[in-house]
Length: 153
Image 1 (tube, helix red, strand yellow):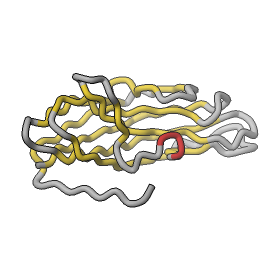
Image 2 (tube, rainbow, N blue to C red):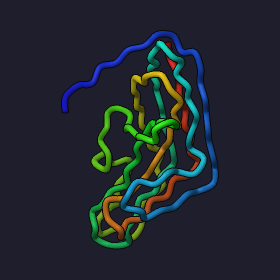
Image 3 (tube, one colour):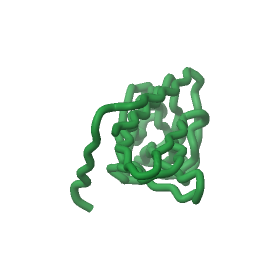
């Protein structure tokens, strides 16, 4: 796809969410990480650069010889229209936040992080963290996560 370049001014708002409860899923389609979302409003007549950072302790396992991975993405969903767009770089399931170890029965807990951004037009948006796995034999657990969204002029 190529390089996506965006720029913005000073940070005007920061919203943080975090949780210490583990969340486990084997969903092959992206699903929301519970409570990892914030509401952002872009006023009429301007555009805002939204920066989002997600960090978590993660574990990606299959209990077999799958060679799969666990993905995370951050999306912005328009409250008015319901349309969602992935923040950049928009890699979808191709972004391996963590991967399982083939021929290992268990993966170790590790800290992982991702940074994303997007330039949004006027409107209200729900910025959400979602997760999925590459294969239905893979299990993804996220724990001790932190989600930060920065709104810039």
